[in-house]
Image (cartoon, rainbow, N blue to C red; front, side):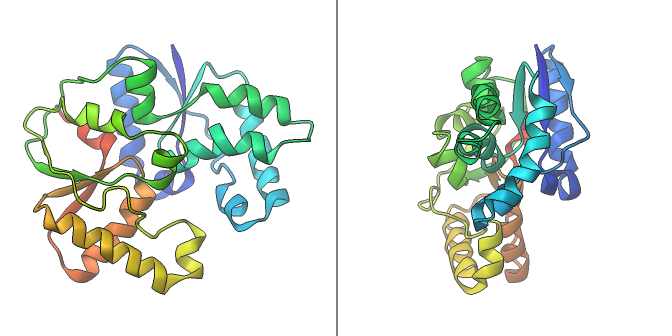
Length: 238
């Protein structure tokens, strides 16, 4: 099929290797990948902050760009939830409501698309390291995406997954939340880091680069050796 890949703004700016890994994976599976240059943001920061009119202004170009897409795969559980779950709410009662409702079922977070749509779990990846997994809030709670990333990691040669106690606990990023409430955000992130370090894993894996950015920043300040990596980067390892 033709996959329309949506790369969130923060991934495009700071973690382009995640998008590149996703393209390589889908092309290896024989699919055609389309990556629209615009728009670059789904409108979630404004939506979460309560500025829904401003969010719609950003989201409308997204609806128009993806209206004919066969399948939309998003490199983030957070942005994936925005398109799939929150767009119908955002546009309820407007002339774009039908477009939002038609787009929603064609939107997928990366790992959920591989496992639940394509039926793929084994990509022949090799990553001989001990890892632990962080469940991003939106992917877990809005998209019910607990199993797919773990099913994929279970098939990676040499990889050992050690679950941390706080796997489902928020990392404290939350987009604008971390800017508005830095002390609370840092305390939540420290809890996540402590739980991950207790596993003695070499890497923290997640489907959300935004969460990993939060955690890696805290780990670097603490001068801890554990590193962070997006699931797609592991699955692209051969």
